[in-house]
Structures are given as structure tokens and as C-alpha cells.
Image 1 (tube, rainbow, N blue to C red):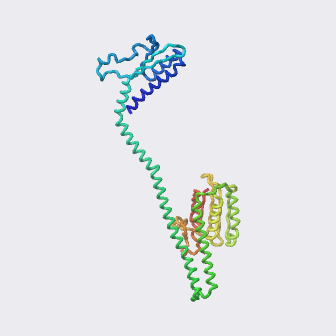
Image 2: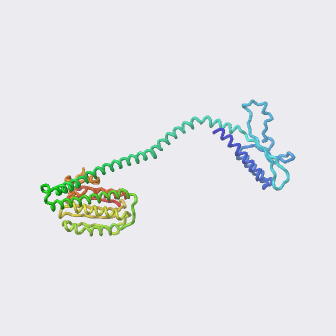
Amino acid sequence: MPAYYHQYKIQVLQESVKSIVDDSKFYDIDELQERLYFLGKKQNVAMILTNDKGYIIFGKNDQHITNKYAGNIPMSNQLKEYNIKATIKLKDSSELYHLEIAMPLQPIDEANTVLRKIMPFIIVAAFFIALLGAYIYSNTITKPLIQIINKEREEEKKRKEFIATISHELKTPITIISGQLEGMIYNIGKYKDRETYLKKSYDCTQELKALVDEMMEISKSEILEKDLKLEVINLSDLLKDLVNRQNYLIDEKNLELNYKVEKNLIIKVDKEKIIKVINNLINNAIKYSPSGEKIIIKAFKSKASKTVVLEIENTGVTIEEKYLSEVFNPFFRVEKSRNRKTGGSGLGLYIVSQILKSHNLYYKMEGKKNSVLFTIYF
């Protein structure tokens, strides 16, 4: 750093003098003197300008620094300087002018000495800055990377568990179908009644088909979760249409529909996927509500959070607190008999959660005293 500073000061002076010499052909004597004045003030140098006859045009005799008496002064006390000379020709004169400049090097040496003295402090400061930088780097870059890796590992673990669960779910209907068909082939016992067991085998294949279709839907939603086709839609109109489609099932089960939806609720979503979510939730509400109970559908704009809130509630049932954290897991069913006729496949709410997560929407499921409430915040 000191060596660089020393060289820098000399280089700046050389460039300044060269600039004056190059531009002097455009100057008269007054303009040249003005330029030299500002150079001396800026660079802190002594200078003298003389003509061909030796007369001083700019500067003073006592400014002309020489080493004439340097030999009589101890080396440690000698005034070191950097000298530079140049010849100048002005635009309005054929006469040549001679410029001598002396730049004292003592201030530069003093600055170098100061730099050397503070260098240990600079090194210590740099060390602590490096520690701080390493800490910030570890928190802003390394930790997020570790979190990403851990998240990927967790997702991989969930995939393996999902595949294992799929294998178990598929094994049951396949075993039933295989056993019934084998019994009918060999005319064993009750399986001689082929008409009955062909129908049972057919029912099992339908369950199996429904299960495979839902698993394909899950696979599709997971693969395409980042490719959402977002569009602005009117949730009020969409709900009205979807509820009308379900009116037959509601009436068939003798359920009371309590419908309170504000007009012109606008949201931005993937319409096809949100239709799947809402249909799934309404179907669940109908399926799990005892006859004569209520289906309550509300949608409104929250003034506090400035979000559109959708609530779907069905009465006559509840879910225990301990199950609420598990209902979104694939193949989980609160009904422990795992009978798909009463408990479904256990994939519906999992698909719902996957779609809502892909939209970054907050949702929750609550088990009240005599009802189950599902809420989505758009």
C-alpha cells in the first residue's frame, strides 16, 4: 500500500504536467498561469516558469527547490523531492517557456509511515470482517442449501412411504379378485355360485379402478404443481354452478343446504384444479353427513385480512383433534375399517391439500362439537 501510494502521487503529477504541455498550444500566458496556479494548489508542489532569457514568468525564487546544500545536511534530515521539467510553447508566442516542478516526498513518506503503523489494526479489523462475512455467508447461503437438501430428503422419504402404502392398498383388492376367480375356476364350495362372485369381483375391479384413477390424479398434480394455469375467476358464480350440480345428492340424502355466498368474489387460481378441490370438499360433506343434517357453504371477503374466505361445513359429525393432523396424509381414513364404501379411498383430502399447497393458499380443517369445517383463504 505505501509503495503504491508513492507511485500513484508521482504518476498523477506526470499526467498533469503532460496535459498542460499538450494543451499549452491553445493557451495564452494568462491561461497558462491560471492552470499552473491550480496545479500547484491541488498537487502541493513548488514550480517556476521562465522564458528563454531566464526571466521568471510564474513562481518565486524561494520556491525553486534544489539540493545544492543537501550535502551539508544529515541524510535523515534531507528534504527529499521529485523533480520534473518540461518545455512549453504558447499559441500567441514563438518563444519557448521552461517549467520546473518539485514535489516534496516527505509528506508521502510520512503518510507511508502512518499506514505502516496502522497496518496491524487493519489486519485485525480485516480478520474480524472475514469472520463476520463467514457467519453471514453460512446463514444466507449454506443454511438455505442445507434446508433444501433436507427438504428433498424428506420428500423422497414421503415418496417411498407413499409407494409402500400404494402397494398395500392395491394388494387387498387384487388378492380378493384373484381368490374369487380361482375359486370359480375350480368350482370350490361357495364359489360355484358364479353369478354372485363375478359381481363381487366386478365391484372389486371398480374399486381398484377408482383407486388407480385417484393415484394417477395425485401423480399428475405433483408433476404439474409448478405449471398452474392461473386466471381471474368469479368464485361466487363458480360455487353456484358447482352446488347446483350436487343438488340431486343433497336432496337424495335429505340434507338441508345453508348457502351464504357474497356476489362477485374475484380470485386468481387454476380454475380446473380449484373446481376439483371444491367438488371434493362438497362431496365429502354430503357423503359423511347423516340424513337430515345441514351442509353450510359460506364465501365472503374478509375486511381484516383482505382475503376471500370459503367455508364448507357439514353437521352431525366431528373429527377428533388427534386425527386432524393426519387427515391430509394419503390413504388415511378416520373410519378404521378402511371400507371404501363408507370411508372412501383416503386420497381425496390428500389431493385437495396438494392443489392448495401448489397455489400457496392457507387452509385448515376443524372438528367442532357437532360439525366439521373446512376453510380456504384465497
